[in-house]
Image (cartoon, rainbow, N blue to C red; front, side, top):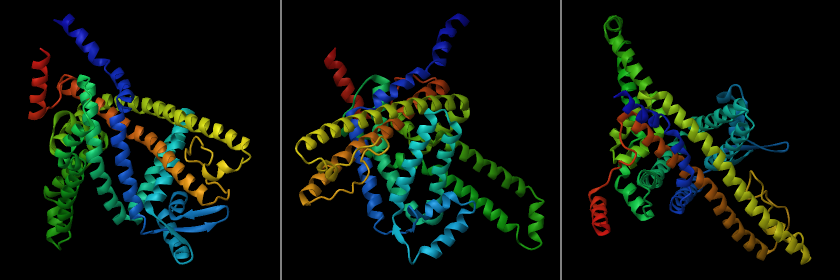
Length: 425
């Protein structure tokens, strides 16, 4: 009996190599196209919302300084931003929250990645912490903007991320490659499940916090309040506080598993939250191990993709520069196409003068470069959803002993598969 179980247990303990399939799954053309479309929608929404410029920017020596820069560098950020706004709100310029946070997040991401490959883990952690500090700035001083944009972003990713997770699940579980339309139809039909799965923990925390608030308010009643605190109600408040802590830990650890739960098992929002919490609390160290493996593998793959894109653009730009030089117009290329950089594929803004024809050509080239950079970002998006889909499948195998090839199918899909099987037989 023991000898029969040992091979199974041994194979179950070494499932993590399957995570290395994530990149191959992520770079499927259909997934990249869906992710790129979602990225375009989010960027357009951010740019439209940035028409109402609310971030104060002040000119300083050697460049500009925004309220975000002040918030990051100051030991008393709230007070510093308040003083900065009072001083420069009238005489300074304005910019949008999306563009400010996008540039800041991009710099922090690449700094963290560079530190990670230099084995400077403290620097990487500092960059990641700086990113979350920037997000806290946006939520603190531009909360209405953040709320609206977060809902838009969640709605887009409920469609895009749900479709990518579904395609990744089918490919990982059965080797199938569903069409983009089929995957988008799946995510659209379960939009509410994808959308509310990450929101349910927030709603739960809000309800529990409201109950604790009512108990605290009751404690302020003269005379009666003192009696309340010596009753079991204080114990109830402490229990509810512990419940909030559990929900927070479960959300942080299991957030990445909520979309895959809907894509893999057809779960509703509540079941997706319950499954993600269950897997995190049942196998916390294994969850951390899988997440770490996926993150390191994803970082290596991202660097390779970015180097490939940079090499492609650099070689093309170099050949064009020779052609322009032989034509006697060595500065002509600089007017329409800035030299690409590893950390800035679009290149730095050129100071070369240009006519209207160069402006048109430069705009067209910029669009192609933006698509190239967007595809690089799309790889990050598809890898995130694909890797977490595989992590969900492995965790489900460990906790529920469910087969890796077991995946939910609706009635229409099951009927199509039966017809295909009968035709093949």
